[in-house]
Image (cartoon, rainbow, N blue to C red; front, side, top):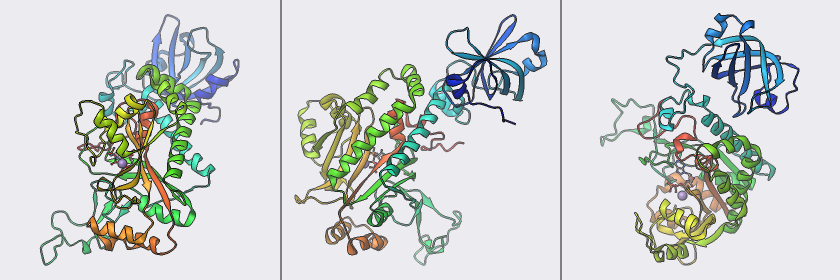
Length: 464
Ligand code: ATP
Ligand code: MN
């Protein structure tokens, strides 16, 4: 069926004029004049459309009647130099086959621009818009670049479980996974739900992070990374939170916090550079349509060394800044996006990496500092996004880790396997988590995280 078919991206860049070619795609627009009709066709391979010139003498009215915005077509014809502006080449059609029509009365994606809010309601069709074509291509390129980055450096891609029985990750509220009859769950003699009767014989949830299992991998393979879906049932309706999102979590044995920071900075710069080199057309489109500062913001990441600073010093800057905050600042409180963005956008005008956060606001597994108050956490802060990476050096000392789990009242019995690594051949190690959609938000300049994943999952929304 498509032996002759060539992707539009290829034809536009290096198609030879005079040759017979065939494209398949979806009609984006139809413009009629006396003798010819102009179609623009897009097949998803590029932000640019192929212009097709249809000579009315050569085609029956019947065929032309079927072709509207949204129709799927096969166009065969000769590639010729384009006389019109805007494209190097166009196709003079000799044959058009219509695979599927799209009724102009009901097809929602007519040529005019639609609001991003409206497009969310038709997420099944929005990949056919310029914007989502660009976002989805960039998303793909970034996923590929992530695997390339780690593969080229000897990291192994490790698959950590999606279903977990450990409640200790502490990164957020979790979704329950069960096959029990919700109407009439089995009960224990005390009247509680009896999870021993559930599918796994215990309570299970969807994972919030692959880190704990990732550590097990790093303590055998030296350097691993995960790249998979994670789930958080936090009821936070913000432009930066999803209930289902993808996370990249490298974990490295024999890395301290400084090695961890070096990797985080190099990794992020690599990804930004990769996007600028490989997604040029899509980025230029987004820069023009949504965010005139996008390209310069990307360049800003490449041009600047990230600031490295302790939480305490950063807190000092925030307290003395004289800014009016929505959330108050004082030593011991967590940084909110407004504080993070102030440091990056106003104070330093550079990306910032903060370390040594108060122990009380960070997870149990982070390496405890000698001061007894702080841990070797690492947050990487970006313009517009705030926290894009969260990580730490991990506590490798058995006693210190055991004490912390106990202090925090975490279920020791669920963590025996994790503690075992500190009993057998423990070693300093570090890692971090990069939220994939936060990265894509930054790279595309989109402002809502719902617009950088094909089918967003947020509170009260699981359509499609
Ligand atoms: P935040 O404070 O922004 O809610 P967090 O501290 O809860 O994030 P971590 O547990 O450190 O997040 O997760 C690691 C990374 O995963 C974050 O740096 C961020 O990039 C991303 N992330 C966290 N929660 C979400 C979410 N609900 N939706 C999308 N990405 C997220
Ligand atoms: Mn975090």
